[in-house]
Image 1 (tube, rainbow, N blue to C red):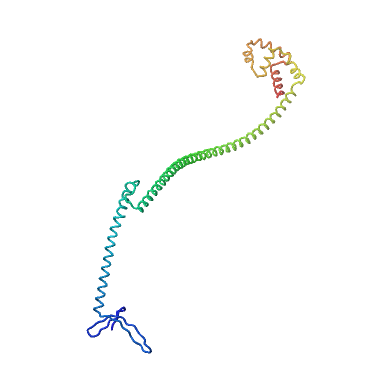
Image 2 (cartoon, one colour):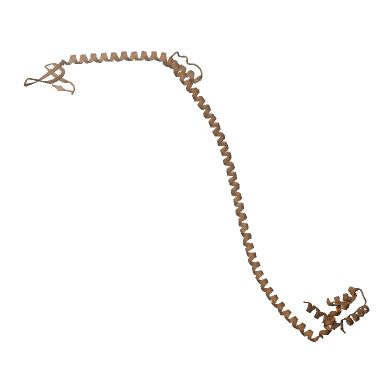
Length: 291
């Protein structure tokens, strides 16, 4: 006896058997029960079973092909034709008289109309978005132009600020220089004032010395009698005050030398002086006294 894991094989002389064995307990004794078929019969039955199976598979395949052909002609071909027609003319009604196909194509048409409506809405929204994008791009360009102008203005202002700072620096330098000149002028003024005071004091001393050499009564009579001069004499006297010479007086007044001598004699007599030198001395005292 041998086994292939599923069947057991038996040999009795020239005969071969195939079967199954199972233990059997009868009372207290253990037995083995075997069910066997001749090997030729088993292989014959197995061959017949395989043939029946092949025949059944062939029949099923044939029926499947016939069913597939029927259903293809009944459903698939009309569906393919309607799909082709739908591709060429979506608005055309289906040719197949199938309720499911009609409902399917009706659904597709409704769905197509809805998709077309959505497409139109999307196109409209896209146009609006394009317009908004164009406006945004235009605004962005304007903003960039304004930014460029602002940058140019900023650079121009920086240049003006730099120039203004230079001018301020120059003004400061000029102010410092002016301040220094002012201080120097003030110092010069103080020095000039000191010199003027010194000269004034010296002049007063000189006047005092001259007054000491001049008779005060005679000088006072000279001052008082100036009002007694005639207009012509007063003109001549004023020219003497201006340090004009005899020729200058004759030229300016258009008179002769004898006429001048005549007027001089009257002037000397009225003012109490004897010579031209004394007259000029009194005039100098008078001018110094006025200052």
